[in-house]
Length: 193
Image (tube, rainbow, N blue to C red; front, side, top):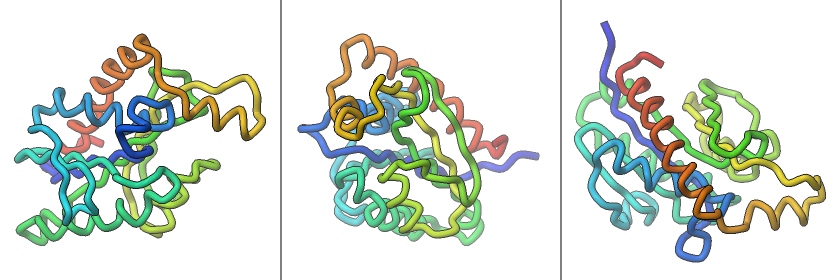
């Protein structure tokens, strides 16, 4: 018998409109597209949820962090606690699942990698380091969205690469990625994952 879990899907990236559709904000791009796949209402700014953008349906809660990527931990932690406090039963609170969507430099564009459980390494991703620091020891699901890697390993070249705007073709690829992520989120909700 499978359970039905309350799901909180959060994305980290840099704030819009300046950083909309940059590679480093691929998590936000995918979450925006995911709203259509999961049939949730338009995003609205929500003060209780750390002033992030929120879209809530009976089945899913989607939330975009309002902060810069490297400072994502505190707003994610605040929004997660607010989400938990909105649940009516202890059973729902215990079953609730955080799914964090973020960019993944080590994956080709269009691929996703799902990591579940405590203690997974941030692998140099400062946004993930911030979240892991704010939610120490917490068991949650991470969905890395591939953005590819530039040829150079020099930090300034990598920074310029991740901060560039996606091409129209890359935004189209992210629409396909949102479909993949929606399948993962639905499995988590049903307790299959």
